[in-house]
Length: 483
Image (cartoon, rainbow, N blue to C red; front, side):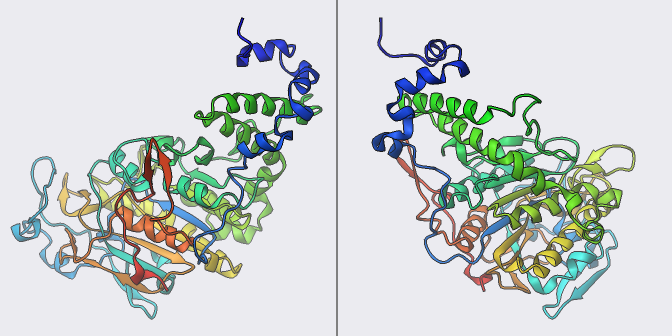
């Protein structure tokens, strides 16, 4: 008979788990696996705070993913020539070097009568869809030469969050957590929030740890008044919970020692401990009743159209206040057709109605976040990133919609270390393609890491003998947008 105990045998030999803590203590020198220095060294806390490569400009990132891909041409990228040529065919000269996929061929160039205005000393252009964000023109650095690979949502969303077109690579938030650790051990270092009634399409692969240890993956908080399920222990189980948890941790440590290649054991150990600490800290962190009526109104919690997204945005501010490093917010579907149909920004038809509702849902809460962070002295230590998987074409689809455009669209940054009131790059006169240096996902990731004090070339992880990094083998920091 083998002298090695399987995990199941260990449970049996310790009287079905919790009743055998004394037996387990005899198996472990000093009463615990971590009591010997050699073994303790194997279980160095993977979430301990780590020093950046150089002084960081910001401590936290709020990643505002506008799922479904809004039209830059109807929000931020003012094109007088497109307005002038509306109703005409797309000149062939604007299509050189790209392959379009619009079903039924290219429609006519199209505009929807948006009203445009310049704001602030920067003179940045905004449409009438985002009047509240426009008030922060002089705090925003626009990237108007964004490009990506792929033109389907699942593929391009995955690339936006992980840098790859296929599942398996770590998300940007996971890399940041791996590189910097946690600043508040009572809360996850990487939190995902989303509005709407269901998890975003493609789901957790977009906040996965990929080939990094599982402890670095994002923790999703659900919409609604109770975003963290099963946080409190059932009645009657609170007493003795610490002892029970200690035993589970020791069992997982034994398994981790025998199978060091399986990071799930350490992830499970850390998740148990985090859950225990979160029992007291997390409910307070996400409890918006702690906020004044004025703040709740500022974020739009008293209006149906802004309530869900405003809730996520206000929770993000509370999490940033408490040291959460990366908050990933996905804009959720709303009743985008007025007929009970849940729609995100993906406006292949009826773009005027779709964008008026989606823009109204996010405009006030995002502007409130910028105002609130600034008033609390937190904007200088927080990076806000408005981002999307791609943009939309200047030609029409289905009569009054726009198709996907990965060749040139707008994203923006605001907060610490950002050159406020600045615009980097541009698209052509019709908004089809970027002109000059295009800004890929890898460049955006490299820039975010730079602001956190991390050199994207030096954040590495050995994966099956290959030294991996967040930006694969690409990426340039956008030094022009840094203050």
